[in-house]
Image 1 (cartoon, each protein chain N blue to C red):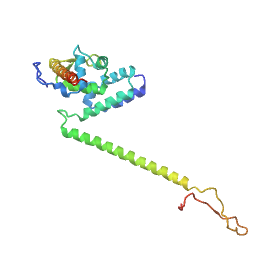
Image 2: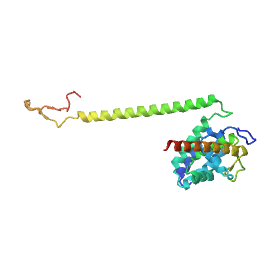
Image 3: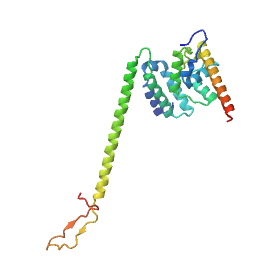
Image 4: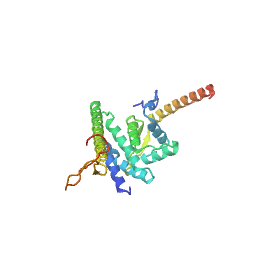
Length: 112
Length: 139
């Protein structure tokens, strides 16, 4: 569980896997349930999450306190990102940006 | 799901999950599978994804599930795989042996029998007929 004050010091998403990060990115603009999450991620990055992977990642993110379930709509359970989840996503995206910038700089220096 | 076989397959695969998971996600997971099949996702890949998810669900350590239980589940899974592989292997060996035996029989079939030259048939007796095998070994 990361700190509730939103100041996540370390990148907790580094070890949760790509599916979990994609789910958090998808939930960043509003609550969604399973089917909409799969469709949204497919449109966003072209990755089709398997339903088994989806539920595993949702359970993991919920255990970490990064997302929370909303009251069920019929049989569908929507989820929303929590404040610590949003903070963790920011930290992770910042980290990815640094890695990306470093990689581009190295490519430039190498003249490739 | 229109195809009852697909619905049955998904139902069976969802039963592989722990009861706690099924109570929480079971209905939604079934509906999600139906929607994905409708969109053109192969039922087999959905079933495989759920199967892998079920395996992960059983093997992941949880507060109420100590690591020893996880290790036991892993051991049982590995043993089951080993037994299955052994059975498959022995069935394959038996099939191979049966095939080679049949081949041997075909191999040992005598060529068209006929009277052996230089043998004078006895009076009022049919000529002696000896089958010739295609190899030197007696069979």
